[in-house]
Image (tube, rainbow over all chains, first blue to last red; front, side):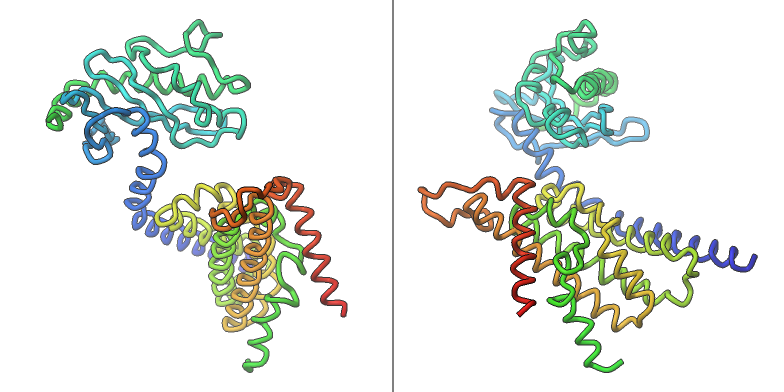
Length: 197
Length: 198
């Protein structure tokens, strides 16, 4: 009996110390990690979507509180008008969460572009949603007012071959993101206008 | 603890028991991340950090950790340091973190780390455990760096991403693919045995 109690105590104390230590390290590094991700993963995606803009979308950004979560928006200025924003969305793929960067035109609600940022899909199959440009370019010009669906579900999106679940996850993520986009749209327009020149 | 044995604990990891060649442990990262010098070296440093830290804690707590649950305890300690390494790499060396990918979290189940905790740190004092961890870690870093350099130089014709041969050089791409890793590892083991047998 004493043995068992000792084991429980040792394991519990170790686990608690480990959890506490990790929470500390995480809170210390989270800001830097966010910055690094912005620079190396999200940055290139945003720059591709916002190609031709006259400002730096990575600098011209703002945050809006959506219930519990805080969402980042990156503003793209075209022809002197701050009429495009990029925001992040998540879809559920085959290997977990898929991070998406969505660029949208505030006047027409049409997609300016889309990019996959973080994912854990299978290399060579689902990962092609990120690596193969032909998948992401087809979203350009599609409207956020209609649900995104792959062709076998009666939609317009040509799925990545061999990666139906990934493609569906991306579509579902985009469709879901339209909900909070519409809800926050008045605030987005108001805040984005400040970046026009 | 005399200085002689401390030095022995340290140097045995550099040649006599150099991982992964002599122990032939931890082959998964050895084969997977040695496509280039940079990734091999980075992986070696990450493993050295985890190894030294886990050795210290295991050694310090060896009288308190009950023998029956020692492996779960080791895993908790190792996993904690691996997550720390992962977070720090994300914060400061993000491109390297992207290249190493899944192999950083996999250090948790790396045989070298668990093996040293079980075979050495659980039975020896803190000083000796630090020496052992440092020696093994540096040995592993050297091995992976050498393997990575050979594969990068012959397989891609570059070193640290810069071309070192003229334009006429045809890269031996077999070397940067998985079978090339096995062949390269085997040849290096053979050469080491040849040197050792004399």
